[in-house]
Length: 385
Image (cartoon, rainbow, N blue to C red; front, side):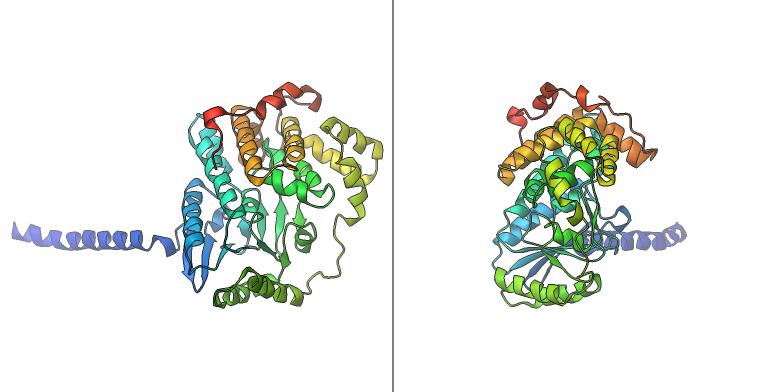
């Protein structure tokens, strides 16, 4: 009997050790390298690190639910002077929202397809209204949801590795996360062009389009972060001065012309049309290689998404960020009830055959009445900010 008890001792010890380790992991969750988001206070800065490098730091609901209260806490904390957000892994800042999880939930009518958009848009609003200077280091891929957690903040620092896009029309969605607010406010009709075609911008072009506020070499970001952390109770102006000094020293691609410069006249005239059919007609009439390429791209997109997006931007141009997010929440729920979002995700992200079968398949078949319905208030289910 005693022998058996003795033999069980090492096992008990191992079990205890496991419990101690588990307890320790629970306590250090905030800085545990396996946590999906790291929230740390360094010097006068609150630092948010998106930590899902294998998933290109895509945002899921649990990350959103950790970041939101932390921003609210830091906003009230007199010892926190700025908030920095960045991603790990060297490839992406944040490639978007966790679309797969939303798709699975939406298919079975799970509440996640409401909770995710609610949580995400509330976070976008918290960033857009944040009283503390908010610095996003958008190094690498920055798309969709990644744009939402950066573009509404005071400062967005791009690098030569930044790759920006709002590619939602290709998956039967629309450029949400406040896209209806920031896109129509870019110069000319750039925002409409980016929203409808999903065009990607790289490096310094992200600054020139007005999406980033500063441009710094990727390898200088750790030094910049260190200097931001070291600032003694800085004002927003002090932070701007530091960012400007790094920005001025950066000469990468300084001479390069903005990639859309030569097409701006066409973009402004074509994308100012007030219907998708009209935009398509103008592209056809123009007939230039640039116009034909845009036509080809637009023809691959969900006709429903295109119509929702054009109206979203036209209405969002004169709305507050809060009104835009409320409108976008209504659109998100309409997309969850429709066909194209699931089909787009299947074709682009799951089966990867890149040949979605949109329903309806043509712009002419998407009625004004259908579009109007997508914008209708949801009563008690409307987004509350």
